[in-house]
Image 1: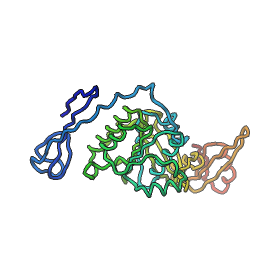
Image 2: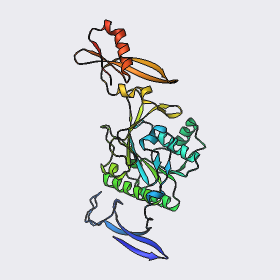
Image 3: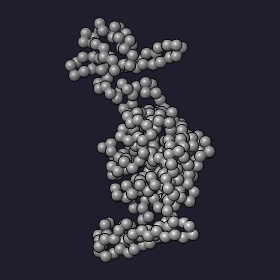
Amino acid sequence: MININQTNGNTLKEVSQFKCKKCGNISASPSIKCSRCFASHSQEQIIHERKELPAPVSEANRKRFSTGFKNVDLLLDEGMETGRVIFVTASQGIGKSTFVSQISAHQIKNLLKVYLFTGEETASQIVKRAMRLGIQDLQPVIFYDKDITQLCEIVQANPPDILLVDSIQALLSSLGQRLTNNELASIMLRIRKITTSFNIATWVIGHLRKDGKYAGPATLAFMCDVHIEAKKGNNGEVIFTTPEKNRLGATGNRAVFRMTQQGLVEKDEIETGYFLRYSLPAIKGLASFVSKFSNEFSTDELTITKTSKEGLFVNGINSKHALFLTTVIKEHFPNFQPSVL
């Protein structure tokens, strides 16, 4: 139940919710039984006032910021944009909190206001990482263990330029309980509303399950503007992809990193061998070539793979490199033949 009143020129919403007297569960509509503890006739009505959000900003008033990572900027076409929600899903230990720290440090260095809402880490953990990364003087304003209502109130009172939520699954309810799928979808919708209303560039971190899917309902990806998957590769690389939704750029692009003591460091895909190692089975050998053209050096990494018919194949980006390697070793492997990617 929502009533609109005018008070001193400000539009207010009277928001009616229903709280279970037994377990404290909050719901938007009344019911005979509580959806959490199933107690009968245990709900009481709670009414509170909330200010109406301003209208979403126009496209012309949106701004672009660099993420601090060249290849991530390319994933997003020209960097992150205000009024947009970027949903990053990552498995445990992939480096998502390190990525958040590096993103925030780059924005603070450029004199932007950054808020970080975290339910993943303690203050001491964040400080230790900042010291290791050398960014202890570039820390955002950090809020710990806040629920979505508190997050919205803080952002509405003094909006930041950049909002980081690490993670959506760690946002606690007002009772300190973990969130259901319906609650997660509602939270993403509220985050999207404050993002568009206050022209904020928002990053929301989400967890990946063991099956590679993100924890929560499918609507989480539909409500964001960009969905980035962060996964660990077979050789230790951290790979960002936009597999299904990207309103800022094309889908299917990648950004490849190495995790170091200084945090995530971007690498060219040729340097990490991403093209070759992740698409080819049964790799038997590697060969690297350096060529010079117009005073510029380029690298190519060739792989030798074994097929189901016991044949051996050379795979590489430059066909001349593959043919050269084939000529050298063909006499030692009678079934050897080139195949260029």
